Image: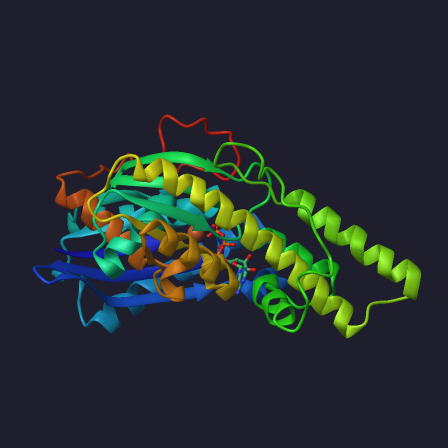
Length: 355
Ligand code: ATP
Ligand code: FE
């Protein structure tokens, strides 16, 4: 099966071709046009600008993905597209393009949940078997899912406010470090002492898999203001220690809640227990080490897809499309774009982290 995937739900316009054969799945091409510069002056993604840029770039992106794969539309078996959740104008741009291709060529159309794309990536990269525990940690998400099948996920919990990536980005803003905050806070933290500032670890006493990160950011702001009031400004060491304390709090919260989520998952006695992480925050080496330690302790395999497949891309959408299509599922030209689309049909859609 050779499938073209399209992704345009946030601030990356992407297209990719993935082929599933006897040897597993292979990424033939993966093209991502970022929009960071477009939005940089606004401190966040501007939906209207994003939608327009997606609409302008998606055709080019598809042409480039086919070209790099050395294929034409006639070589494909289906076209898969992110149908949500995400910024509706962007999702629509991708869905319209995919429908256009399907209508013009007669190729089957497969709508994909963006989060399912992230959650299935460990199967694309490492052929991980169901059921596995998935931790999605990014700028917009933080949730624990047991993946049981291409469209069967059980949500164990998630953030009730900010996502960790968002918290890193806000921390960087508070400390005057460059965006994206994750890498710059991590670099500073490496030079600091995590014990000097003891920042809160919210919800650790609660016996569930929910997390919270907004109080941490407020505590960081207070700690900064206190130093500024006392000494008139931050020294390099102050900044490094604040970053180290902040990062350590996130590591501790994620490690502790992951231990809890693994406990629930392990009750099902999976043959080969696996924890997979995805999302930009999985790039953080302190967080990775924290999670690896918990896994080693509980006899669970740890896997994290390469970073370019952790952040938004279309290879994961093409692959999720392959999984659906291989099960005989597809959509017709009435496929709708959905701004909200929780992965777990049983979970309350409005609970945090499931945008
Ligand atoms: P989503 O795809 O869930 O809607 P997003 O596109 O913002 O959200 P990603 O692209 O997966 O998320 O990841 C970006 C986030 O990851 C940013 O918030 C960034 O600060 C964070 N991040 C990147 N590298 C690191 C790092 N080394 N440590 C911590 N956070 C990091
Ligand atoms: Fe994403």
